[in-house]
Length: 157
Image 1 (tube, rainbow, N blue to C red):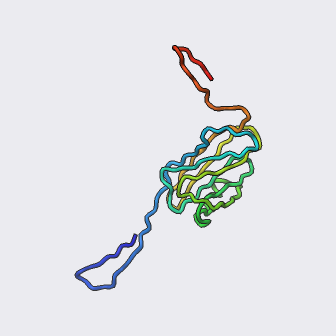
Image 2 (tube, rainbow, N blue to C red):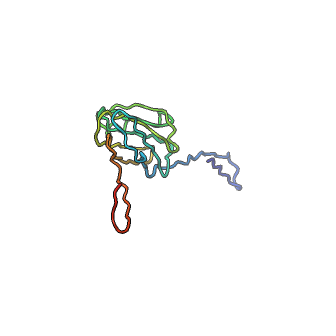
Image 3 (cartoon, one colour):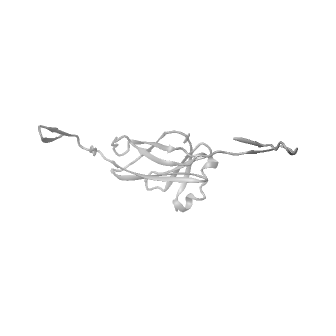
């Protein structure tokens, strides 16, 4: 936005200032659509937000045990790791050029059957948000059972 101030009673040079409007990061959601993956299969996560922050970087700890944090953003400058070192001590960071101004998908490969917790931390210079997402990697279908009530009797499928 450009704002120009003028005074009709005084003749002085016009002063022009630029104001940059920015957006905060609000309400991260992670979704795997209930798909259970097996070990060594690629797991896909959908990352969405109610408000995608300006100049935002998204840091994801996939809980792979390697302490490698993936950084997703449009510009590497948005992903300054200075503050992340306190949040993820002992971690290394890998930058991935990704449009984070809208819903996006990320993937990871898990080599063991277990329950994992993915941490998604989005930040920009004036706001941040975080969410944890727990899910199983299993050869067994761990989804919620289907329940059907027929004539007052429960039938699980």
